[in-house]
Structure formats: C-alpha cells, structure tokens
Image (cartoon, rainbow, N blue to C red; front, side):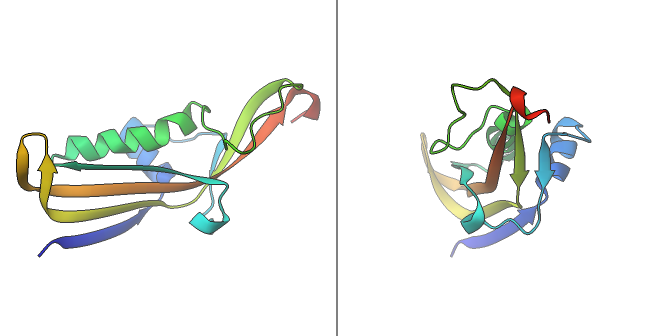
Length: 132
C-alpha cells in the first residue's frame, strides 16, 4: 500500500533555502490565503524515483515566475492602455502532497514517488499613473 504525506510550507522560507533570497519586495506571504480565495493557483506535478533534485526542480517551476514577476491571472490581464511598471503578489502556503510507492516512469514501473505542488496567488498590477 502506498504511503501519503501532505505538507504546508511557507514559500518565502522555501525561496530563502532554495535561492538564498531573504526578501522579495513584490511578494507577500499571507498565511490566511486559501486556495478557494485566490485568483489562481500555480500547480505542478511529477513522478520520479525519489531523488531530491526533482523536488527542488519542481519548487523552481512553481516559484521562479513569481520571483521574476512574470506570472499573472489569465482572466484579468494587465490593461494594455496603461503602462505596467510592476506586479505585486500575495501568496498563501505552498502545498506539497507526496505519494510513495510504485510509479510509472519512461523505463518501466519502479519504486518512487508522485508529487503535486500548489500555490494560491493573488496578483495586483501597478501602473505608472498610480504613483505607487
């Protein structure tokens, strides 16, 4: 039988451990932000042999666009008639769910793990004419 583990991680702590970044002015962690209250969630999933490198790679996939201010809500894109100068993010806990057991990989079925990460996000556009 497969073993299951779910963790809630502070994404700012993950950014500090993963990249050595101690402060990101345009990203604010809100521990009360739930998935249902967010504009969107950044979600990634993968199966692998259990090597930690793959989990670190998935952290990169989830966080790098926030760090570089390149993520936005597809149903509320920036106004093209105004000059966008920055994007601010409010993010909740990073959810990491892991199932340990047999996984299907390209070479066959092996012992390993399947992981899914989700990060709730609310973005706010800052335009030049707002004076922020």
